[in-house]
Length: 79
Image (cartoon, rainbow, N blue to C red; front, side, top):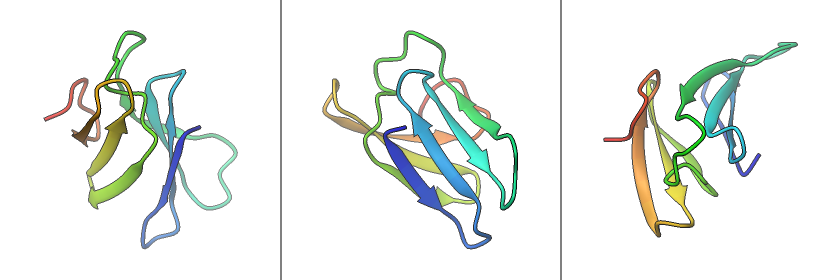
């Protein structure tokens, strides 16, 4: 994991560089829910920063692209 964020409901969001995804962990969960799965070749998903924007969107930074992307949960590419 390279980035973490917590929303108002105490849900934990984890940006995972190697898995190219964001996983949501609700309080007391034993498994996470994949909110974004960017696939194994997404260079823009080597996020160091994870910041919630709306209840269904998150900003993820890209170290290799020197950029910040806005992702919508469930989407396979950033906007």
